[in-house]
Length: 89
Image (cartoon, rainbow, N blue to C red; front, side, top):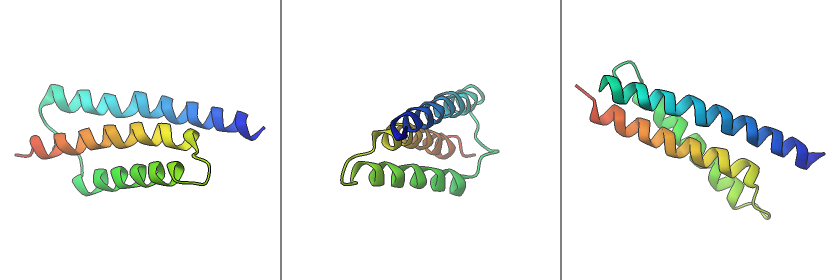
């Protein structure tokens, strides 16, 4: 039962992460602007995702249901942070 819930949670996390964040990245890239995004908030998103990756990986038994979606979240939020800095006016 716990394994099934883990698969469901990881799948939902991946769907949201793989759909939502790339759409923001593409929007920023096309408009060459990230003026409406808050850098401190995206840094907090990044740190939160990274913390979950570290926690999930370094448990007694690594929890890949937690690590995998959070790893993608860290990657995508890192890209958005770079975009915010690059497109700053």
